[in-house]
Every structure is written in structure tokens, then in C-alpha cells.
Figure 1 (tube, rainbow, N blue to C red):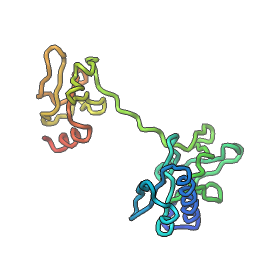
Figure 2 (spheres, rainbow, N blue to C red):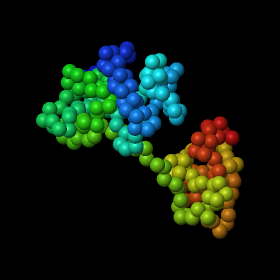
Figure 3 (spheres, rainbow, N blue to C red):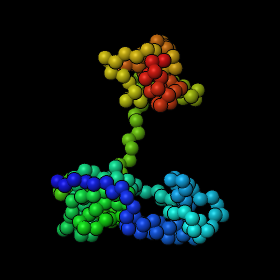
Figure 4 (spheres, one colour):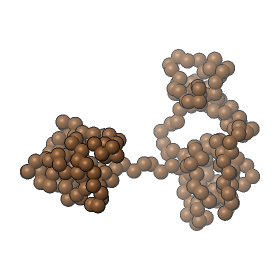
Length: 219
């Protein structure tokens, strides 16, 4: 299907993209819209009153991303072995053969990330989709007891464990004292349960990251 190659060195196309971003930053500044400055390898929001013309003497700039569909903007967003075509020219499609820091190689030309709203992709050349990044799915709370926020203590800072935080039945961890379980809200909450029963309801004041860390550490 062709090997995708990551472009590691700055190319003429990359420079062109930087210049396009600079112009877009000037236009955003004139409209009063937020824009960013690339400083020390990181993008930083320009503070109010900053003169974009003065900044462009020393740094690259770009407008801040606007709300809406998030189009591919990083090499890892591009699916392996996919074809792309312009939405207004569906008759012609091309295999993506190279991926670089400024865009993808479609046919014989590099298409910058900023132009991908005009394209769609397919892995089978039958079903075509816009070149957008799927929105992350929000974890679903595990609530077999169908408890209300009042019943599990949301006002006190508690949250229900998410479904993907319930451990498989064959997994055993030391008890996490900040984790409480209940098989029946009428009997109250206990600390000894380790959170691997799908019929129980679990609550904690720990964030997902904090709970995962405690489980890894065996606290």
C-alpha cells in the first residue's frame, strides 16, 4: 500500500505554512481575535495589547484555533494506508504516501493541515469521511444502584467510579481507603471493598488519575 514517511527536516512547504500562519495571525489581531506566539518551542497566547507586527520580527505567530470540528493537524491523526480526495472532485483520489510536520503528501503535492477541511479520506475507497479527529468519548459512570447525586454525595465532593474503572473479577488490589462501595445504599458505604464487583456502586473523592496512581502503587 505504500510506506508513509515522516518528514523530519524543515522544507520549503513548511516555511510557506509558517508565513501563511503569520498572515493569519495579523488578520486575527486586526479583528480582535486571539492569536499565539511560538516561543522556546511552545505556543503561548499573546497578551492583550501586544503588537503583532513587532512580534513577527522575532517569532512565528498563528491565530488560535476556533471552535468547531478539529481537523487533522498532527502526523498521528492520519490513518495508515488511507486515500484522500477533494470534496469538490470526488472522481480523483490518491494514496497518502508521506506525512510531515506541515501536512500530508496527496498525489504529488503536500497538502497543508490548514487545507484539509477541503478533503475527505477513506480506507476502502468506498466510504468517505471528513479529515477530522474523533471527539474523545466521555467515560460513563458505573451506577448499577441508579443513585442520584444527592444519594452518592456529589455535594460533598464524591463522584461515582466510571465503568472503565471497575476492575475485572480476577483482578485484586489492596484496598484504597478513599474508595467506598455499597451493594445497597440503605446499608451505607464500606471502605474494604476493592472495586471489582459490577453489582456494587462505588464512590470516591479521588480523580481518575489519583485513583489509578494509588492502584498502581498498591496504596
